[in-house]
Image (cartoon, rainbow, N blue to C red; front, side, top):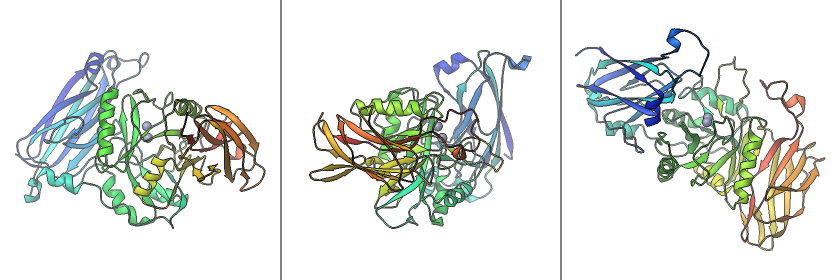
Length: 487
Ligand SMILES: [Zn+2]
Ligand SMILES: [Zn+2]
């Protein structure tokens, strides 16, 4: 059979979504293929009759599984996902559209997966057209197992950033055209280097198709952390350093727990993303065993006070949860005029091992502080104990009581240093000198953390920010907590 096209048409209703967020459209290949091209369109049934008033229109996402199957949470046949960012994609033996994994296309039953993200009350009509180009040569018949292995992540550690035992700065949450951003990884890396970042996690939505490209770019003097943003319809989670794709088809906390276990088994670290109204929020609850939480997402005033309140609440309950920042920068064409900018905020980690593994280990330990941008300001917090200093993320072996602290503030002149213990501000101090070191003794029951607070100077207004933004009480830097052992 030569090049041929298969058509599928269907209709989905809110009742379909209530039953399942995902629909699997089977596609049978009787012989090996060289390339599959999938195009799809969708339109709300009501909208076809005219008029834009009423409920928001439908959003239908798309992806592909090969004959190895769709089983949750392994997804052995996962070949890619593009959400609703593309109406067309190609998966070939040698190449694929960003977001999709190239490799053999043996005969068998494939599935186009449709994600019923939002369905108009009147339903949505979906039309899928798949063009199959038959295999030309011998190579197309290679086994799928071989494709999976050869698509596995390679070596990302070619180029340590700098000498050991230093603060390294980077961004833990970014996107390229492997999901819904406009530019390739190479451009993102260039922008990161121009800002002087030492590490960069690329966390495209629900795919790992960027990992191979990152491995090839790893010689460019930046520690690259292969990531993915597990993007479910009920919350997002970054997974860094996992050696495989992690499933996103979750609906319940139990299913999300399975994905977290899967990520941990693959050596990954899980960080709960932007748990704030419009984040989109995190609806699985905070009891799941994630390793970190994105406590600062995009420039400060956009929902971050709510996240900080949630973090304080969890810490107050005795949870030890490292906080990180993430810009959620979607690498853009030069015409971009939005509010999300690379390294706003910037996450700093203290490590003696400037590799992805070393950086992730430091995050797991909470040796982390967050700054509004790559030039700071920055905070270092340390507790003084009879047995020596305890750094951020560490535990002081003492019962609730007064705790001597050392706080060093860099590039923080003009801001107010605050110490927050158990959800209450217990110390305030205006910073007047560069590199100022402050040594307060404060009452602590479970945890204490530091922050720099101040009105936003107009010159620092992020590009693209609305002019009527509330400039009061922005956080400019956040430390991680120091914990007390006995409560
Ligand atoms: Zn997200
Ligand atoms: Zn994101």
